[in-house]
Image: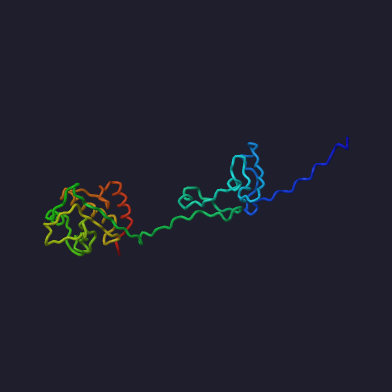
Length: 246
């Protein structure tokens, strides 16, 4: 009868939340836990004298609440990553969105370039000083400043590129050239120079090839590895951007 119907007992007071001080953390199960019917267990009552951390609530799968509620940190992509994605245009609804910054344009007039090639003897071999001297004369390089050889522009008389010894200190001694033994020669050119970059590069490359043929060596790059056609084309394209120095 009605006498048997009783009002439900009053709800128990909510237990204090030990994580209330952690902003953004809520004692709600993660989506995957809710889908599987897993509910978080209630925090056990800490016994007198026990450490407070033993009262931390955990999920049924053993994870702690702060581990479940942790949100992955957002990482702002670097410019290179943004550059590969289509740019988002600003709009009336999203006026703050702006296009990624493009790399600054380079003014060719303010560019500089150092071109370096080496002429190397076969592995385990060396160039002989007297042959080096003859090869310099045949290639129209003259001994001069810094105690190295130079190829000069016939019209202005200014040095276009230079040639040094790959061994320290890189210099030559004309009086004792016959005593010279070296595994290679280094050619270098600073652009812009007295000749337009593209033409200067071709003259330098042709000179290196001629010297290599005279000495039985091969044209290599700065690391003394054979200079490939691809590397030659890339260097030529870069040099061609630089006009003759006014």
